[in-house]
Length: 115
Ligand code: DGP
Image (cartoon, rainbow, N blue to C red; front, side, top):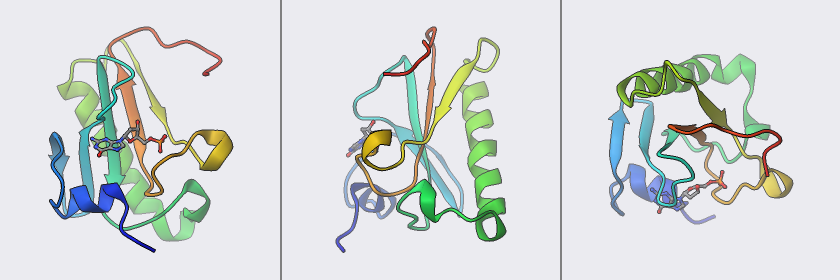
């Protein structure tokens, strides 16, 4: 299987507005933002979908994703008013890029149910 667009961003083969990086995590602004703040937070390791996530194997990595989300929400000034974290999974979930990613959305009132 070829590299996903997100692996190319991790490897700096294509540009992105990177806002956070650690040994295990990268975060960058979504190219097609759905809110004033729309950041994608991804593990550097390739995990295609939520279905491959295992608590026994990935607990620490998931913790790092949530730490990054909280840190970025604070930095972007959306922590106090609130924000939304989303993982889309497969076709019905609306997943387009098959590299696990958490959407951090904020800066406006979110609605429910989602589209
Ligand atoms: P999803 O539907 O959950 O798979 O979301 C994929 C998101 O990735 C979508 O909101 C648009 C974003 N995206 C796709 N290609 C690129 C890219 O090349 N650069 C950036 N920054 N974002 C991208």
